[in-house]
Amino acid sequence: MNYVYPAVFYEEEGKISVIFPDLGNLATFGDNVADAMRMAQDACGLHLFTSLRDGEKLPTATALNKIDIASVLKDFDMESAESTAFVNMVLVDMTEYAKQHSDKAVKKTLSIPMWLNTLCEEKSINFSKVLQDALLAKVQS
Image (cartoon, rainbow, N blue to C red; front, side, top):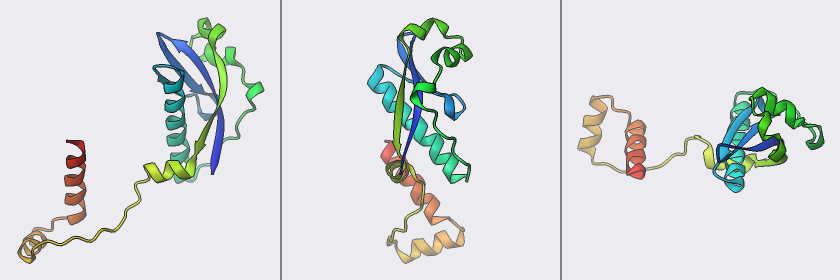
């Protein structure tokens, strides 16, 4: 399912800042407009994903032409950025976002020597936790 929310983009200290007025002034930034758009999609996706997971009702998106840039920037003491600020809609494909960011567990089958299994069970070692920690360490190295 796709969700679309308006965001105010403006330049701040050589970066492009982004604010989502409909999402509690959720904010992010990027090095340029393309990077800011990518960061905006990710921030919006995380916010929506978390809200949906927690059973919260999502706010209705404000129409693009109803966003008051001056008012949004005033809340952040950034009135000086109004001349270059613009509003753009940010699309998040929640189906794709959930696929990439879900922490839903998947079952994997593995084999270990019986003697190791016995020792681990005697010590009440959580196999899943140990494997997750080891795999995370491996991919981070």
